[in-house]
Length: 237
Ligand SMILES: [Zn+2]
Image (tube, rainbow, N blue to C red; front, side):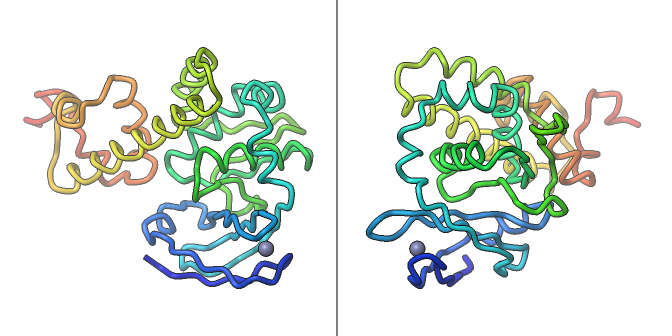
């Protein structure tokens, strides 16, 4: 854990946070943003950190707290759309920073919503150069993100759930599930080659989960992707 100290430009309070160094290393674009909720009149300080845990930027969201509870899930869907939300959630699995271009009000609503799901880690970045993916709602340029189709299905399932709390919990647990399984797959493959079927059984992966995790490994750890063996014949050759 790395301890970081930062002063809030709004209320001048000195704030501290502990950050898992793995999270910093996993930020492929090099920058992650961490929200710190604080103050008597609660507000959020968004801190942008680079791979070494150095502060690269700060941003205060003054009205966020209220909004995170007031914007219903269905409205989020109406405002940003299922597809864009699915892309952002999918990027969250690998802590990939995304540059999202949209109008300021929508951006704040989205940040508030995401802070409820990702709890210590929002992934939207203001710095296009350091982002791994771009979602531009103004020019309508959308990068393809690993796992976005999977999350589109999760969102559709969520819409059937009663409360917004249960929807957010479902999404958060799906993200956590994929993160854990991807980490486990990387740990296994670091030791030895494995057959697809073996990985699926060992990690309890559905075919869909396996396909996502394979793409994540190809993207983040191409050295390990080669250790996934498709069939017995490949083992011989
Ligand atoms: Zn403050």
